Length: 156
Image (cartoon, rainbow, N blue to C red; front, top):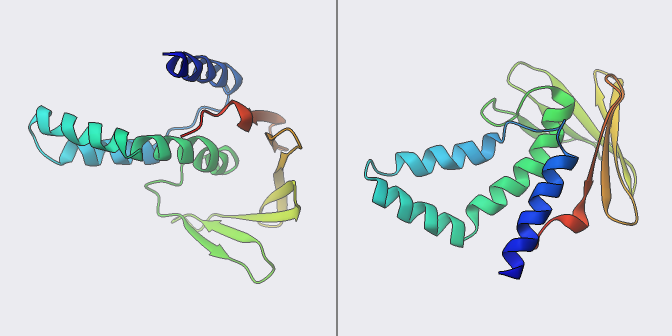
């Protein structure tokens, strides 16, 4: 019971913290749509949902949406899930995320705690992590700053 209470408190705290950075959770919706398409019988769908929850597929998809895909959506303005985004490592050590429309983001690690995000040679913002495991995303164009405390993420 205590664990569920901690999870609920962390979820509420994260919801309040990330109120301006709510992504569309495309990967989680993709898993949900797969779950829904498995069978037309709701009992079978429920059984599959329980299996996905126990395995923990839903938890991993939500975590990936929340931390990684939401960051890409934060800078790109659209969710990469369902839009055929490809990730290609560059020769310079950077990683390029290119959408089906040809739009590309470049993620370059500046040091162990900081990454710069660029589009067509223009720096859009940065992602930093401090010694207390606080991740901060800064969008230079909108002056939007979002922070995530990784210590508050419940263990899976």
